[in-house]
Image (cartoon, rainbow, N blue to C red; front, side):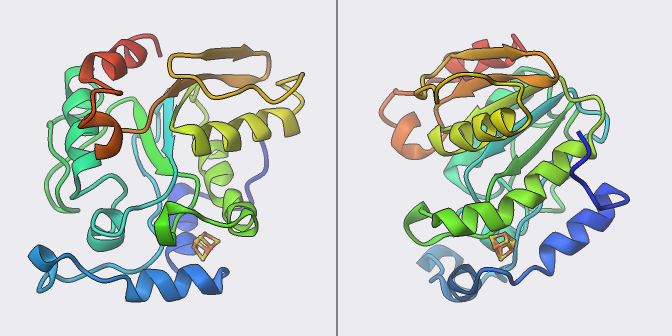
Length: 223
Ligand code: SF4
């Protein structure tokens, strides 16, 4: 994959955190209200790049940072309920050195995987517009292209699934109609990492049992 114009992940991450391409999302990330419990805590309020192992074989992507998670802490899947669930499972699968992701300086280290989101700024109601998705897709695609050992992509939720399938189509690796999202689906292609689909680890899914730790762990063990 050669979409990148960035010389390294560090250069790319700097470009991401300085980005102001989407006026609606810039306004929202800078003004989204803090929860009462976090009202006195510093808030990042900037784009949130991915992070992880530069030698990763597994690329994990969700939708976007959450208001009280990534937009507050400055690291994706950090400091909210989705992070608690995801890291409990990543730790059990051996991809993380600890089961918690609470702050940038919490000592977390990913092994064999890189974690990111398809849109780098928190969107109102978790719904980016089509144009915002298109504008931001340059960044996750560049992250992917700077990780030369990636052989698997785990998509968390339908939004990420659609974005990654579209990219596989763009690359002419996925041929055929647009598949519908289904948890546990696997797409093997030539010239593109294998795509694994999972429900998003949001409280909406994990509190209701729609996604259990075992369901996610089973997928991670296949990657
Ligand atoms: S969503 Fe992406 S493209 Fe839009 S301002 Fe944020 S970082 Fe930039």
